[in-house]
Image 1: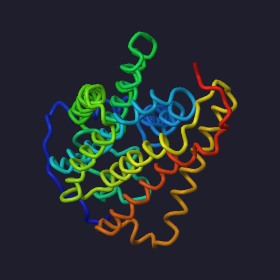
Image 2: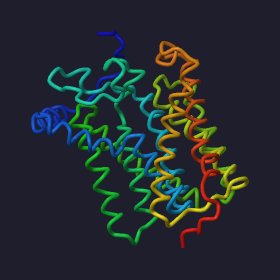
Image 3: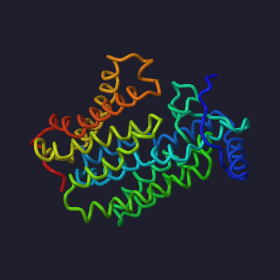
Length: 313
């Protein structure tokens, strides 16, 4: 075991009791798989897939609205984690197991890879994503139900899998909700979108001075790539969404392939030892890698779309 555990320990006694009980409830392969499936709804790849479908295929403005909210959440959450330094439950309680680590390729006690506990990133991300979808389509009752239930199940699964205390999840939901309320209002009242993006990016840049976990640099890279890609697409690409189901599916599949392909390709020039190290060069490389990936996905990839497709009405 690597001696990489650090941070602060604070919790309510009832949180540990609840978590141990939940882990007892799912103490089977089937239960763990169900909880793992629920938690996936708050993971990076699902967020990208949903955002990609909205942006590439369904409604570009809808996608931009959701993208603005979720990217702020992706950066603010690790900034808060690196303030509170809360250790994950399994660090301090032997009866709590980590059934699905944040980074399965790293040591479970490597805080740089696994991240701190408070607030829950999955809970924040799911609340920001599905809550934004519901907020944009307020009159759609089905989406409103999804906007409540999916974040709830994601949050519960994080406790079940041993990754978070209950209060981590509650705080994550609150951060996600605040992101929607605050940034949605900013998008309505600040007419210069580029200026808004610049201010947000500069404010979030402060994380470079104190964040020591990879989740911040992943999120900030994605934010930079998105903020650069949006004006690029508006000026040089101006693609149209489509009603054609096959084209919609192909756009999402193509986007997924580019995401995984670039993520692999951009790692090749560097050693695994460097990329996995908790060092400034590794953090900068991660930021640049994700910025390039998102810029290509949002700004360049749409150049391949059928420019003569009819826009969605």
